[in-house]
Amino acid sequence: MFTNRTGMVAFLVLALAALASTSVVSESGETLRSEWVGNDYVDMRLVSSYTTLPRDGDIDLALEIKLKEGWVTYWVMPGISGFPPKITAQELENVDQFEVMWPAPQRHTLTYSDAVGYSGHVFVPIDVSVKDAAVAAHMSVDWQIAVCEDICVLLEEEFVLAIPPTPEGASASATADLPTIRQARGRVPTKSEERGILGENFEVQSATVLPDGQGHRLDVVITGRTKGKRTDVPEMYVSGPMAIRFGTPNAYRASSNAEVHYSFPVYLPDSRATLGGKDLSVVLVTDEGIFETTTLVGAPPQGLPQSMSPQTAVAQ
Image 1 (cartoon, rainbow, N blue to C red):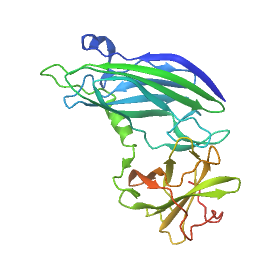
Image 2 (image 1 turned 30 degrees about the vertical axis):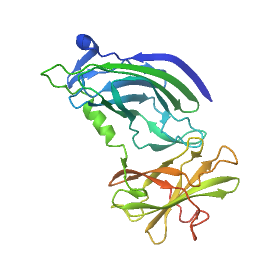
Image 3 (image 1 turned 90 degrees about the horizontal axis):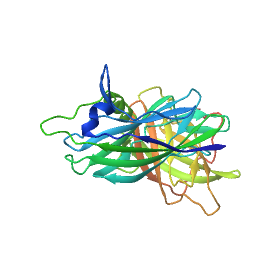
Image 4 (image 1 turned 30 degrees about the horizontal axis):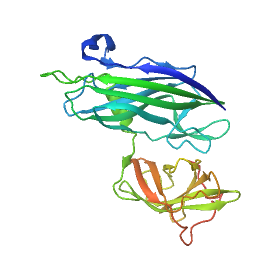
């Protein structure tokens, strides 16, 4: 069940004249952070990588999330029954780009289902570019986020930022949060410019939706090997049209060891819904890196396995 918690608003207003009062100086350097907001299960705040706008107009922000032990929050495709986060830019002034950079998620087992998302202490990077670095940037962004354990609690938060330019002759100072934000960006998948390619070692061969009992499943086949054990199966997450949900997959290597097969439970909202001919986003987590690509969902190729064999299935 969901419990609505709305109306909690976190304001981070950074003005050059009031910089000293809005900054907190720690042993590792300056910080620009909003106040913590949340409830008994989660605390959140917005943090900046710099105290003022860098000369190139690019600045990293991040939503910092601290979850109580046992609680999780969701990735963009949260699983069969989860609640996806919703980010709405209500007002952007002098902002050319505002992009949330979702780190690769993990699988979590809850009382009622598996969830795809995050636990513990999480930073979600936000890539911001301004039109004119000599002019302050103003942002009003609404976040809806669910946190779950035995129940799910839905929060709605609004973060308002006004980030001043760097004074003439000065340089933008990095905050103590810059290293952590950069580390979080290291978990953001590298997007391939070529359809179906996942880094240097993996490639999507097919993606098909098939009937499976009373429901459906998505079968994804990739080729490639990790540098680890020959039987290693990389983690895979998929996302597509938000009305269509994907569960967490069963996965196994084919006997040739050249192919890896993933089978995702699929929830279709009605009998008319289909993924055929639509693009699907695929995220693969390997020892060599985290990669993302798009692939077209098509008809099942001849010879594709119609079910997973219990003897060859490998839990991720």
